[in-house]
Length: 190
Image (cartoon, rainbow, N blue to C red):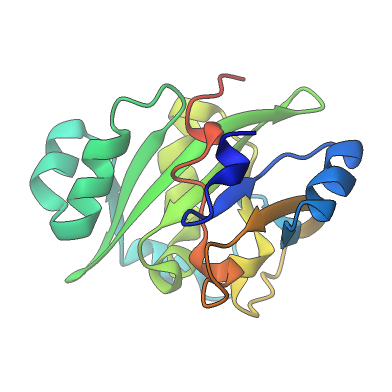
């Protein structure tokens, strides 16, 4: 209840049960997301060429050295998190810092993308992101909230129901501005 009294903070409920969904809706929470994409490592038409033009690193030393500004601060905030997996995707001068968490659904391992600093580059190099996360999560597919697809329709993807709620601190905060970095998802062990 003390958290619900915080009116100057946006509050996220990423995993409400059906009963909790109804209760939180009555408390002023609104839909953050309705579905997520399940992305197996199956390339689309341009994915292989994009993958060959990029690279990735998961090395702590590389992340410390190559992340700057806001991304470096986010890494410092989350480098200790139990479930967080950190990846830096690179292509030329562009980079995309990705944070994912492992999860299991019906006994199958997945990597849920909690944050990407450059969603366009993430989508261009998503197969590299999957390759980077495979060793640490064993993920058979990536999970990405549909709001981050920004209208993209990956050739091979499955939509899955994924109700999420939030209560924005003010009306200017829209769903695409909210990620999972500062949620309990960062420390849940599966």
